Length: 305
Ligand code: MLT
Image (cartoon, rainbow, N blue to C red; front, side, top):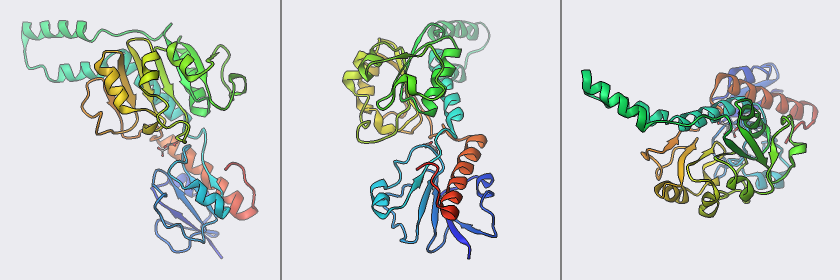
């Protein structure tokens, strides 16, 4: 008898290939699946069939899954921590560079120039002044959340010459896996934010992190600071961000989520949740999930839940 796996999103074929077809039936629509694999689909309002014995999230965050309901039913929820850490790290670094060098504003400026000859030269000169940036070495980065992504970001920023501090609500710097030496430990979120010109968020969305970055905390950051949110939109109070940008306190808000409130703001960079959208990260996450589901469904082992 084959095991039935329902996929709620497009899941990488490399991952699904780990489920041998003589043992598994994999489809996006099916009745009475044994397990569900998903990426960003929202399961909170879904009728989850009683047949489901496991859920696999091909990504790190599990806020799109009703964990309480699944715990009551005794259904393990697997995720893929670390599988997309490099992909997210690369996008965070891009965000830091885009904001430090005002790249998007400068690009738009040049795109909209219509003059020619000497006038064009003058406008180019004006652009050089208007979009003058800063360099990263010696600047301070605070990383909130020292899981796989946060640690990757901290290490990469150190390699770029930044002074990095970290804070995690659950673990100390000494316990953060593979964190390179030299990352300073902040005592609290407030402590970290007050000493960081760049702050990057890498915590999951849970009750304690919703609205973590609010108006009071934004005020703690040095004037001209940049906030990067590649975790979840709800971790940051967007009204407070708009206020801080308007006051000229926050220089940029870079976030990996579209937002109706923030759309069109010249110092906000929003992306369509691209952090984990690389070939490699999609493969890694799907492989990690398929392997965990096999362990559970075939042998009853839990590697991570
Ligand atoms: C994650 O939680 O790792 C991301 O949301 C993954 C994704 O974009 O699917």
